[in-house]
Amino acid sequence: MRTQRANFIVTTKDKEVMSKKTEDAKAVEKLGKARDAIVSELRKSIVGMDDVIDEMMIAIFARGHCLLVGVPGLAKTLLVSSLAETMSLGFKRIQFTPDLMPSDITGTELLQEDPETHERRFKFQKGPVFTNLLLADEINRTPPKTQAALLEAMQEKRVSSGGEDFKLDEPFFVLATQNPIEQEGTYPLPEAQLDRFLFNINVKYPSKSEELDIMRNVTGDEEPELKEVVDAKTIIEFQRLVRRIPVADHVFEYAAALIRATRPDEPDSPEFVQKLMSWGAGPRASLNLILAGKARAALRGRSHVSTDDVKAVCLPILRHRIIPSFAARSEGMTSDSLIEKLLEEIPANEDLYQEKVV
Image (cartoon, rainbow, N blue to C red; front, side, top):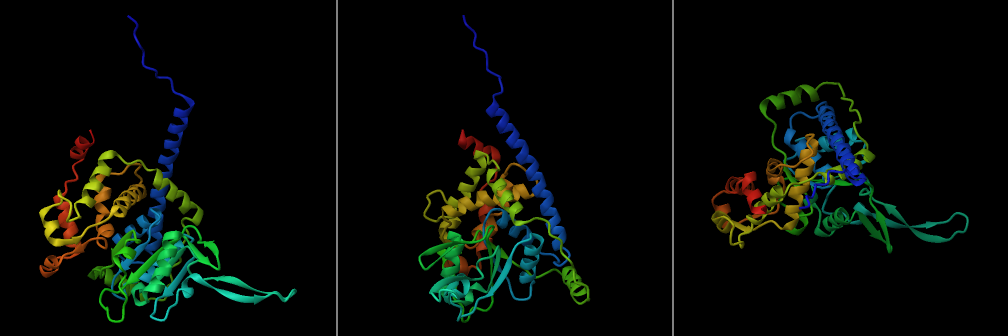
């Protein structure tokens, strides 16, 4: 009887794969240290806002855009400009107003004359969207046509004018703000356009101790000097690294279970979802859960994604993608409270999802 022996010979391809994994593990460790350095620099000008900073950095390294929702005076603009400075990124700010035109964002065609030939031709003058980090202040104060111009650029990463396409700078992020209180004279973003934002981040009031620190720091005459920690090239490399982070099947199963449970017409969705939600999240939410989970893990120096990573990014990903029903609103329930209830209802037990995969 002939006995077969297992082949334990390591091929050149195996060595390359192992070498790549080792390089990625070192790069993940480097990203974790870069994150700590960026947060340390931001602490020089920003007090508190730990969760906001964390979520913004996850979005950046996951190649996503953020919608910041908070009342005026919470240092949202200062945070974004400080983040751009520590990351060596080009930064521009657009104040959205009712009379803002699409060309004020994307750019416009100007008629110019050649001084030698005196020939006239149109030349595209790039708008403020051609930068790395764009702050769209009070995006809901401008008409839908102008909103659509920005959101199209966010999605396509380019601007079309005069039959030509102009690619936006890389990396490119939009951090848009909204005031949740003043709704008069505003143009709320439709759900389809809200879906373009990876995160909807709630910017809350500071605690008492944080507010005291803010008063002490801001009323002095010292201007904090922020150091550059990373540059655009490094950010792009880290973004590619995040995409290579492996995800186990049970994490995919958990993310899918969460998103499918938000849909009231799904037969397996919880009873409270069928009663209290009018609309659930689409497949883009599933993709974003995984991407944001990868970025969160990498920023913490880990080369694998856990169900805890997916659970941690659920609120900012889902709060603008689900619509509470009239019954939920009449009971005083918000998107956040429904998501928290959903996280309690859907278990994050690794063994449970591994059994499903098998």
